[in-house]
Picture 1 (spheres, helix red, strand yellow):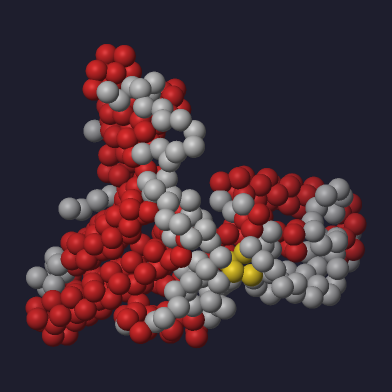
Picture 2 (picture 1 turned 180 degrees about the horizontal axis):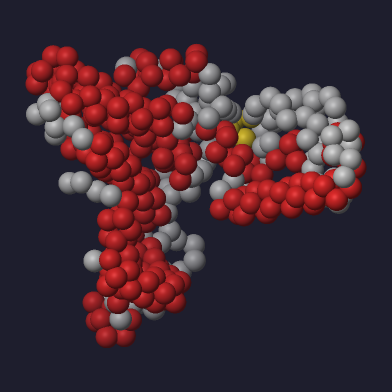
Length: 82
Length: 298
């Protein structure tokens, strides 16, 4: 497997897109991964599932606007240069 | 954290303007300061520069132009320094390169034969970890970067011996190895976040621990070049076992503060997850080493 730095960037962009596309109401809640279903209180250590749900929610909140910009730039570059 | 800022930052930035004698090195500075007498531009540096150029340029317009240009240059240098400091603390990076030859030789011996080492703790001095010069257990970035470059050169030699060499292949090999390291550091960060371990492992620490596998890779490729396929597998097995043991012991010492004598003493709920992360990270090393080297020793 030969990687370039550009392929790493592409893979990272696709991965973050995949996380951003998971819809809160229609999908995550049905699976049981909604963010209001797993809070376990303050004193305990959050398990792996709670950490994952927190991570998904924070990635979606933070990366929503930058993803629009980065996706547009990538689309334009791919159209121009293949 | 406190020690991020406390390193050489105070000592190097707050000198007076234009001392002619280098200040005595205070114990928090990592390297000797050889840039004495450099005036920091904070107002008009023209007085210091004019005196030097007075005899050369009698033209006052040229004098003003020189003064203006130098003030612009030093202002942009300050801006660049500030921008870089926002992303990456340069002092933190300097800590990883404060090594000397005794440390490097002992660390290389430790990487190849870690079974005799007893004490794996990283010693601290007043909240700041000791530099690699003083503590053999401290991670450094010098050995990984040198080993990375040596590995790229060895890959070029190996490919040349098989008549498969071309400069593009060398660049591809270099970027592949680099990308694998970045992927591994990101995977380690993600798994450490998921098991909610409180440790002081910065991304640079993880980069250092991931980069130690290049030493094993170099030995495996050398064994393959010198002794054929058998030599490659023997060297691969030996360095993989040594690297797994080294990484397991080092990460366990950094992730389990409860093992420190003055720690809490009771195992927390995340202890099992930490063990899994350590063992998983150690187990992935031989796979990556094999993946990155077997195409060189066909």
